[in-house]
Amino acid sequence: MKITHKKFYLNNHPLIKKDITILRDKKTNPEVFRAAVKRISLILAVEISKEYHLTKIDVETPLEKTTGYLLKQNVVLVPVLRAGLGMVSGFLEVIPDAKVGHIGLQRNEETLEPVEYYYKTPKDIHNARVILLDPMLATGGSSSEALKYLKKRGVKNCVFACLVAAPEGIKKIANDHPDVSIFCAALDKQLNERGYILPGLGDAGDRTFGTL
Ligand code: PRP
Ligand code: URA
Image (cartoon, rainbow, N blue to C red; front, side):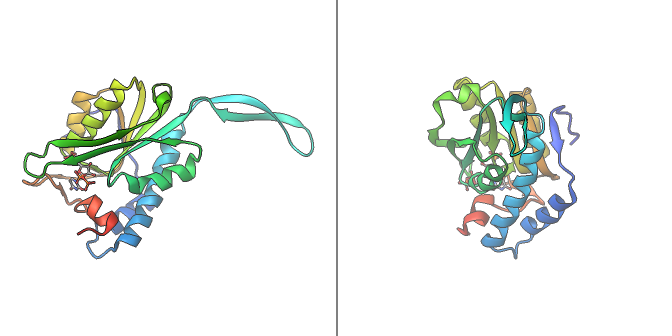
């Protein structure tokens, strides 16, 4: 399937390729898995934030006055529970003053439709730059639903960061949310008949939290 979404950004950093290999390996244990998720998240956070606007401020060094900078807009990270939680610490390392909202969605393993169970986001999220975090973009049902919720809360400026994306999911986001950029660490082949990404890495939540 050809990727036609104009806002799809695949990060080809060599360190990401190395860490995605660690995630794919079925022998990788949860501790090593979480560490690799964190390192990839750090690189994605740097890439996503490079477009952020700044406000100039005065700052005094021990020697003289000069100009410094603050981020113009607040940042809110929104992990999709559970697996999105694994990406939070890497993003917070790069953007330490970001707020963190949570969206609880679980895919019904038969219908593959997302089922909602929890929402908690900051009151001022509508003014913020929002980064939706979910390692897996499979059918796109969960992330599309999460983006719909964020837009209902008035969010205008949102990007989606994931680790592994399937063409089917990218197509769904491009169709449902053409304004949302997708930043991704690996583009995979396709979904299998159970909606799992091939070659993928299996169930990201189970691999992160050791619930296999
Ligand atoms: C996984 C993953 C995404 C979703 C992707 O979560 O973290 O949220 O599946 O699939 P989709 O694109 O087809 O919607 P899951 O529903 O397994 O929940 P979990 O993180 O609690 O295990
Ligand atoms: N969710 C996962 O965790 N992995 C997949 O491959 C698809 C959905």
